[in-house]
Image (cartoon, rainbow, N blue to C red; front, top):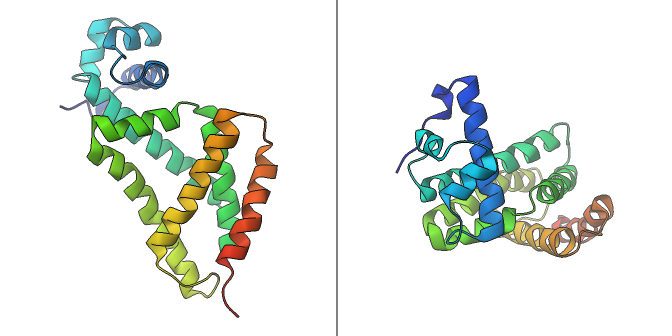
Length: 199
């Protein structure tokens, strides 16, 4: 299974591919992987069904591309938010806020990523491994600088990712009534105390 390399597409081709991925996000999020169909994806994207096969070979291929694209978009959103953050706590605060904003604008993120465990388990694991690797590297640097508590950086990365994941699910998906900035500050109260380096 393969798809066209986006770098080789024309501007029009990139727009069509983007439209198909956006439609796939909506359809997989609404129907789930098993019930989603290529015809509904193309109908939602506003393109002919045959156009789908110019960009993706089958349903699993576009699903895989979608999960990868969502991971990349989330990562870029967080990296952009971290620009100018000086301390590790500033990084945590900015990263939390960026994640919550992304979740609010991609309401089907959780459902799609969790489906990946059953569609392609390696894709599912890679989604978290790739995020945790850069997260752990940043935490390790902060440990070496004496900013935060010293412990296994990967364990800490997954602990913080788990906290963020569940807060987003509870307060932005189950009930979108929580002010993001207030949610960030409440989480930071806990994180600040947990990360505080021994003196």
